[in-house]
Image (tube, rainbow, N blue to C red; front, top):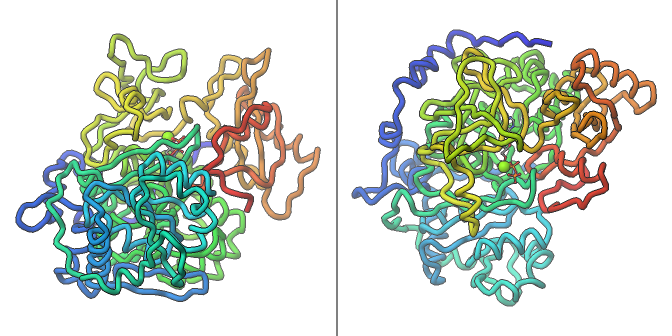
Length: 590
Ligand code: ATP
Ligand code: MG
């Protein structure tokens, strides 16, 4: 099925700071983008926390709400920019008083509580490297990441410390300080954070920070294998700031909610840094992954811009329009999605049920910020990730036998023209580009060829320059001579009213090479049956022809990564009886 483009009301295209896409691209340059940030006083470089906090605390937005943290009981803690400056200053002073030097790694293992935000930004102020971990990780993944990252400091709670770290602490010689948030305890080898903060000076003079000083250490989602540690530097803030305007339409008066946990790159780049650099209000919520909860927070907090993920939107869709109609979503004006392919039916559903289309955008842990996006003032093409944001050059490269870009004598071939498909590549040089994989220089070096950064994703491009996600290079299925990405098959299945979500893999087959196999979860009111299976397979054949699934299994508990992606490699490993691989980022059944 072809989906009609969704055009925007004209007042959007009249946005004074954005203009139309072509014009914005033509006029954009990174030096001008950088000049929109203030830099440290006295020309002492650029520091993320200064741009996010101190410069607003010193200006007209000092009393504006920077953070609005909602806890599970709906208690709200509000912190304005001036207070956030003081609290982050205290945290930075606590680090110094404990002998923590610039460049050392500070890990956080916390839920979405106010202390997480002050520790994160205080770490950046002190020019230490922030490594945020997702609090639901088990002991082993926490240990591995602390060890690989050489964490000098950990900020966590007593409960998390006791359950996940205490017994492995002696094997972490680099870990000198553990600060505990919450009820004071007499746990040996730890320091009560509130106690330390109580004596600390709120005034902290941010040291000169160079553009290349390390700022963030982020582990990838582990969708395709063991997570990799990607390093980002302070210059990244230039891209955080500009892309938030270009792709999320963010303005200073917005109430912005990003559902991603700060343990993932989305949750720091856009859940903390980018909206604060605009002086906006950041909403964070400790509540569950649940459709009712999301509607509740959107309505109660009068959220204006919502940044979420396809799996969350599919869950809203599964609950139908009736649930949506019970909440007052009138404040909401912009929705964006990232992390995995956004099925076109979700975009159209947003327009029909929420009155707002969903803007898909694409990026990776490695890219640090949004690279390809449905632009605020331009029409949306459902199923497309959009076009490269101003300042970003993308290309599609010819692929070789192994599915990756064909590198010949160090060179690659760029595919030009309309309706081509190849490995998605980006021209290096944007500020939030990762500067390395920790302890894996060879892998980093192998990510570049012929002057391009190779993303490992396959995409197609239409005549107007919109990019369409096909699959990950190692995910693309070759069936009886046809190539198909799992996303296309999943999206086709989702057009059937019984299907809530699908995960598709290629299964080795002596005849076809690979055959397409689908795992499907159903919407409420539908139950697995042989009849439905036959119907869905026939439906798939009508939609997809030769690349339709030949096998289909009902699975009401599709495995997801904790960042919300269907874990196809696990579906495949289970199907083939192979080792399940690194499961540290697997979301437990929900
Ligand atoms: P790992 O690298 O450890 O296997 P990961 O690639 O899932 O995990 P992330 O950096 O969190 O880790 O995710 C980036 C990837 O997510 C992209 O390379 C792409 O495959 C997918 N992705 C992100 N946004 C989109 C999107 N809008 N549409 C399709 N795919 C997307
Ligand atoms: Mg990846």
